[in-house]
Length: 154
Picture 1 (cartoon, rainbow, N blue to C red):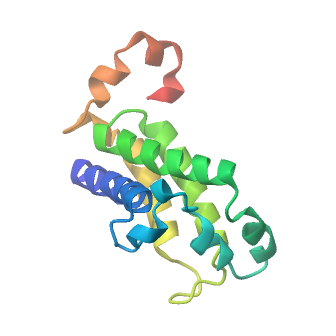
Picture 2: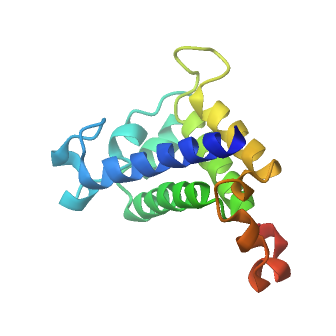
């Protein structure tokens, strides 16, 4: 079950990356694609609300923020899909989801919990369960010299 959940969550991140990059229309229209020179963070960050809205709105359309966001989506999604670097992916995913959660305080549907909190918790659970070892490359990755020297890369 953890392996299937890992693959599904990896596809969530990768889909967001590809949709924002190419403008697949779910929800990014082609004219707003990153490849056409548009900012993948503009719509979300410019619509920030709550106590930190001024900070997040000031980050909209920042090229470095766009690059870090898109690299995060791709890197987290690829790591989850492959089952490697699960600890790093879980930590990065939790940070990304926490920041996305903070842009929309308070949540509109549920006053405490939204999908960003759930994704963060599931990502941490995947890493804790070594979910990359089943239907993934987690075991061979863990056996590499690099991971042997730097176990946090597991």
